Length: 161
Length: 433
Image (cartoon, rainbow over all chains, first blue to last red; front, top):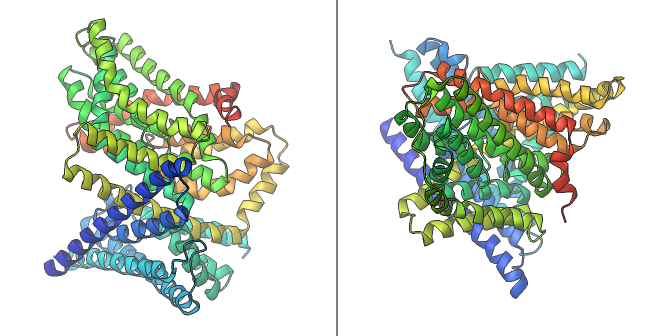
């Protein structure tokens, strides 16, 4: 499992750097627009670029959020249970989370395919929209892999004597 | 089964999954999805999963959140927080409980450039706790003052909760921000008074630090210049109508970055960490947003929000009674759940009630934020208490809770004052361009 874990963690680290770069672009384009607006002219389609950036930040950030265990959960009850019970509950909730994210990935792929077929584009800059949907699919799949890692760990805990 | 019953069952299942430690965002998506299948159709539910997720992660208005978070992170790595505390230390240190008061003042100052109560507590905890330990501060008072001080960041603009409240209710984020200024200053002052009274009453709680000369005090003011510059840039730009909330956030982040670069306080490592930390928090926030939006679609189908408006509208009680009931409900919810999730789940339900009773929505937003501040420190689930207990590993959790207890009083007083004098919150936004 350690090999799988290493791959997932490296992948999510690289993705978080890409997301960080995208965040920086969002900031820079916003500031450039503020500065250029009065002295020259506004940058065409700034909101579209920022939206594009936001999609990348969220999609590529999902995995590292999960690895850092930053997703908010209520510790109150389960942390008082015995270790094995915790592991059983953890496996079930992990599986449910994976299923949920898989449905989102699937639906995003469906929408992405439709947008690709009709060549839907953003209104001002005419960026194609389907790659963003596929970015979401990709982000959800990597998140599912992170959750799979958690699931495997919980299962090991369940069967451990 | 009536639709409302199904809605209530859905809420019950959601609570159950949350208490079973399922991440709140995923739990909301799951229950919302299954509930939508039950009340609507499979196709409809699948459609909601696809559209609702994407429309939120590609929402220009929501881009304001990561940009403000980035500003807070850059400000942290620029060392602005430490300087703020040092200045407050010089001015207040010699007073009874001066370091705890300086902590609250520092948190309030950092709150003016950071929108997250958690991040502010996290930033100040490691800076101020060792210092207070050195001066023999009671661990409860020391930890309580950081945990409570941190929460000020969500009332003092910029504030992540005001942003979410504004987006959900389509109110101006700029006006909400401005409305938080006076109540924020009032609450920070009352929290400092709470420290003063405690230590005056029981001097064993804290040693005084040596007094400083006026020259030292004045010289230390340079330490707040960076915070002030950023605050004036962001809030001045918003108040003057020069830029939108999104642009203010972008400009603020760039400003904080620039300060770090000019003062040569940024390492490459710090720069990357600021970006990656913001990405992680953004992921966390958006999972909750997506979850809440999908869950809300299900809730709308159940008719619960409409039923609630009709019920509350029919009650022959004055609006302030409704507000009082909401205050109690939010204190209970805040004690149990994450504040962002509460905002996303309950504001769409209660907001129509607020409007139907003729209560000023901006004023209520301010009261709401103070209630969420309370929720961040009330047991059993006070997130800021957990965070500070994590930083001060030698202090047991119940000591932090004991220390934080007195800070509930200034929060309640502030809400009372706001009820008596709504103008305290509304004067500035009513005079905004």
